[in-house]
Length: 448
Image 1 (tube, rainbow, N blue to C red):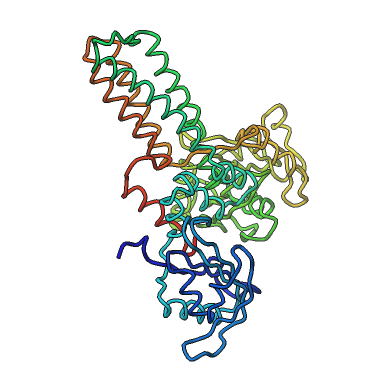
Image 2 (cartoon, rainbow, N blue to C red):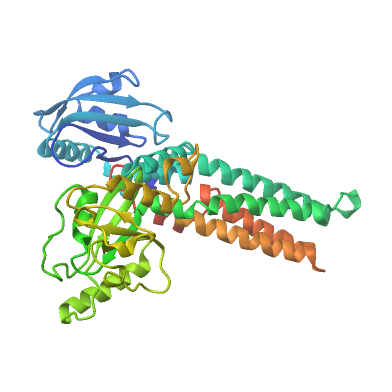
């Protein structure tokens, strides 16, 4: 029996105890299985209208009083018959209902199997299917907006337009190759190459959103560094709005990294508090410093916390040669700022009084260029898979352009253009790539 011929079932709402739970059946036998479990109610239900029913066990005892909704034919999320059962949200109740539906002939759904069926049945393209998971895991307004844009087909439409442009190029070039007697204009000179350049430019625009996509999905890796007692842990607590890290006057209190997520003006920051950097550290503390420098090398943004009451030379820290963006934070400004800081760059704050916090937020936002205004009206951000496909397409287009500019058979350029076209097709799932599909849907949670 093929997977598509089976009827699958899973809890579509979150696990745990709640007022209401949603259980979804999808497949050709969804209605008949629900009928067996609910004494024929599903077959009598008006489509897309919630109907009261009682789920009964094998001997006729009531398991729960529920509302079920029937979606017949292909007019459902998955593109196949679906029955959704809204039950009470207790753990035991939902488990008993699922057990009863399995007894009646359903199979437990695998991770992402509902969304996979929606893709296979043409309800979603592959970028939209991925957006379902992005929507669920969004941790900021920008991430949510980007997921909605992708779910509406933003990325799929753009890449499909690029692919259609390449189809036209391939068709024109191959027609000239195959039917020379038809006097088809080869158009393989500068005009043809300009069309390749236009396709590469369109791909470059999408590739430019890769960093934005990574930031939205993973957060800006923001590492807090500085000398002991500069206020690194205090700054972490201030940005989080809670006492997450231990704060002490004793140097070397933080021996290992502490990582937390916070959303700043719509941009998720993955804050990493680190061990203080100093020359006279002991064994354990020295290991903490080594980890601090490793974190700094991996950071998208570094917040260098310096004691504003000390001369600049006494609070200076040495960072790796190649690091990301850096914002200098002059802490303890409420205790007075040393005259040596006059004319030097830095955001003056007080972790004790919260003075200067708004200035720091503004400085962070400015350093990242990832605020709401910087994203424009549409927040389209590709993921790693999209990026790899786009890079392959760009490489093939470059190869085709080079072949056309030299004294090479046009058939070779046509092959490169086809490779570019297929790479773009993979993004929305326009080509047969079972391994790609398996890798994508395996990341989903059960019930989606």
